[in-house]
Amino acid sequence: MSPERDQVEAALAQLSRVLWQQRDLIEVLEYRLEVQQLLMIAGRSDRLSIAVGEVEGALDAIRTVEETRLRVVAEAATALGLPPTATLTQIRTAAPEPWDFVLGDHHSAFLRLVASTEELSARSRELAQKGLGETRAAFSHLNGAPTKTYGRHGDHSSLSLPPTLVDRQF
Image (cartoon, rainbow, N blue to C red; front, side, top):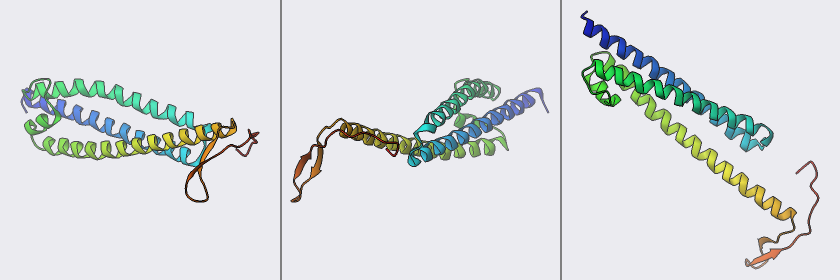
């Protein structure tokens, strides 16, 4: 093998390792988002701050690897004779076999992971907003604020309840 070919192989191997690392971290993020959702659904607010911290930690790890990935992408692009700002798709197109296939596999996996993670994030936001709305309604009720309800004939009516003491069941 020529020194140029060796350099290309080494750069693409390093790129693949970093992409695997990034994929693993995104899967960890997905897991932590799922745990966070389960805690919200179960009403375990006492554990929610831990889950939020774990999600933030996973995001920090992904950001750190992203910086490495940007550097490694530039190195791989340069080794292939592309500009350092080349995209992964451009690198994949210029890469020799089997690297074109390997990079294509990474690309497909990233698309799936990003879609799944975005869906989990959206669901978490929905659950958090719903929980916030329920909490606000409960506090309004506890403070004696009128509660909007439907009357016997389907019209809106206000029901003013006296302030209530909260027991541990709340």
